[in-house]
Length: 390
Ligand SMILES: CC(C)CCC[C@@H](C)[C@H]1CC[C@H]2[C@@H]3[C@@H](O)C=C4C[C@@H](O)CC[C@]4(C)[C@H]3CC[C@]12C
Image (cartoon, rainbow, N blue to C red; front, side, top):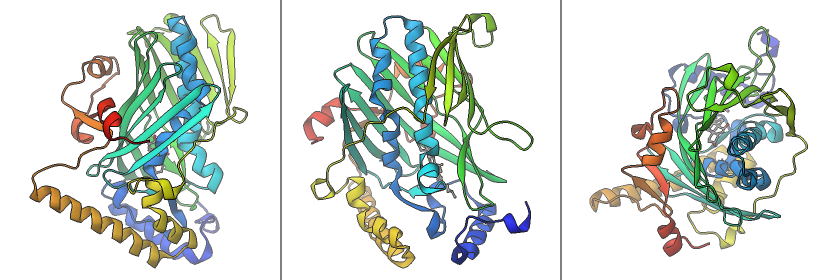
């Protein structure tokens, strides 16, 4: 990297703090929440909000529920999943010019909202169910089409020339009409552009979608690389369980870019669909005005921190963050004294999860990794009915 190109995107007054940040990464302990980043890279959005990326185009989420053929349904689940990647991994870069460090949610933090469009109402509940390690759980459901997505995720990071993140956890898409489940695993990622001060996410290796209908999908990710390759590329295949390596069993393929467009072909290599991420219309998420939100709701709880970050006032940011952290420490102390755990508002830790366990066995090297997510988390409909409110 030529010296003059180094940290080119870093504001002049932040060059010192960016190089200190890069140096501090050499002793990074893998805990993303404890990473102290310079002000210009801080986001005003909490990780609990990221759960909304799963359904910004409800039409694609509900499409599999309308398809009677199980192979095509699996292909439509694949199409929806790939369509969410741009929002999940590239939207901050596109909107803000670089990836940012999200706010680290506190235990019990909530993010609630809904999408209303021609698909009916699609409801979102996102809750921080664990602080050590940080785990976010979510439930997204559309009763008009009998579609439910629930999942939880944690991140395990390491530093080798850049930040590498392994995602732990999974999501399950359930279709009522076919009583079908699709286990979704998450791709590992790494941060590019760290040296130049304009970080962005690139996805690595592969992730899986395993249907209880006997079909599965593997998505391979590749990026620009040192010598060749194209940014944000993917190659995906749909195949019957156990036939991942058998080319003659491939039912559908998808090739292209998860930030631009990809083409889906059938077994005869005929084009079935071309998805263009730049043209697909999104439905805006509706979130209650801050004044009407529960005190645990993300935008209300972080309001003063977000204002301080926006002003670039680091002293006020630390002061306001400290108030939240102090309150959390007090709560944990009280719970320890009373020998009880924080009561999650919408989710419950499950001792046994037979459907998940069965589908996980179909993922090469798959395991539920309960110890890394403080348990297996499921949406608790009864809790939501009794105390969930909105
Ligand atoms: C920018 C850099 C200097 C700081 C590192 C920030 C780091 C903690 C952020 C960067 C990207 C974030 C990913 C994000 O791309 C998307 C998702 C998908 C979502 O479903 C779950 C959260 C996750 C994995 C974010 C975690 C925090 C990441 C790694």
